[in-house]
Length: 625
Image (cartoon, rainbow, N blue to C red; front, side, top):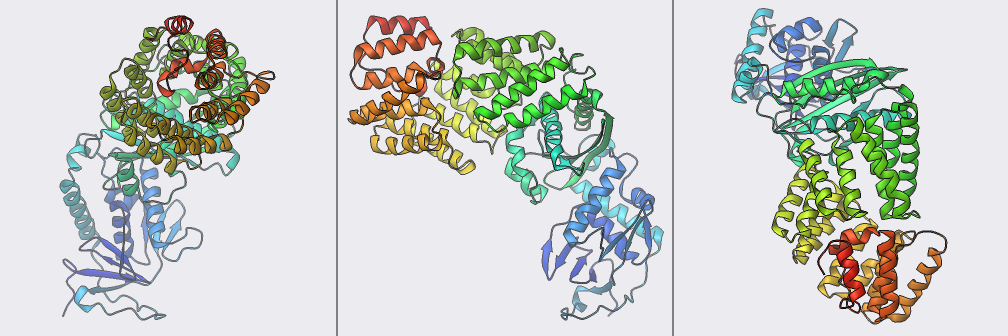
């Protein structure tokens, strides 16, 4: 029986077979996912096996003139995905040979058959040369074009292309870590900085939810298919990119992929000198916004100014070391940001990043709030003087007003402004949730924390912030479940064990609490706040000797560095020692201890709660008794 190429044609090569009717590629009978454009390229190459298929032919056949795409980027990506599916190599090809600047040629033997004629492959056998007739080139073009349009129509894509827009409505997006094509791993910080900057700019697009960099970075060097990543992040589209840097010249290629179908929506290349890189990033964001019919807030002139290349280098290095999330990392980050603004005094982004790094010293390390906050505040206010549209600077200023000055309403206004400027960013939501908790609006706080998790579904902090909201609302079991999910993301994280211990204390599960707090202290010996809470727990469960041992350690350390007196006051209170507890609380008040802004995370004082001196302190920070 003669093979029916229109309905059941199967093309075989090596251990692979391509079913042109179903569009399936199989390897030893197992299906392999192949994006539509890669499938169309393979179909063309197989039909003209042994012949050169030029790049121009591929462009005409697969990328219509209306499609908003950088052809070189799109074709190179489609060929790369085809080679990955075939486990092929450009350097030592077994199937697809590249002819530089000309096109591609399929070099393996190809057989054709109907599904009814398909014999089982014999191991080690060499396929015979294909005896199938070749299609006429014009007919092939028409068939491929019709097939492409049918699939496109069924996916709702063609109307979008005709309008110059995205394939389907794109309401959510993740920027995947860009590839470093410089050939130098030491430039990873530079490439990561490009990813971070573009994520920040895209978060300003009206109506677009942008997954945070924290969650997207989980897929750095991941080999997962894009539809799987899109499903895990629950986004409509993914942005991929690559960065090539040569001296002071930067070239960035980017492509927007519809996640569910793995289809290109947009692709383009951008290049500039390093001194113009901020303008380049904003140009990319505006172009992507246009591609998905979004709206980008106009950038300020300060952010788009020409940069001193060395200043920008220092800024990106500061972002990289600050990502370590420890005292040494933040200290080095501040040094890099200081170098950046020394070289470029009007570098608003560097000032904003510096303020955020300085604030991290409040939560660990040897510096007191009175040493840290003036520097952080100066940096945040300078950043806003240069560029009032920087959400990061507004967030930092809000944290300063809350944590140091206890100016709650003024701080809330800064957080609200940050949220307006970056509505789709998860970073502004925790502060908003904290304000709701402070006013007793727990259900709203939980809803805000849930929204943040949707924007940052793989980030440790979003689960912890949701746990705080549940705990404040008295939903302890749900708080514990969220903390345990956070530990799945970052195992052996001292902060998670600390908060588990705190939650168990609220529940009255003292032994469980002490076990978790001891783990937290063991994981981070340098954090006196964790030690103080463990001392409180020992005292609360009737282990005064252990509590006094920790008190002695804290008092000894306080002679060499800053140690918050708030935790010392808690231990004395739990031991029933009124005067030392009051004296320590008053010292903490004078130091502007950060714990006063986080009272919801600490158990209530008991021994001193009815004392007039205690009520004076509570009135001083502006919170109810």
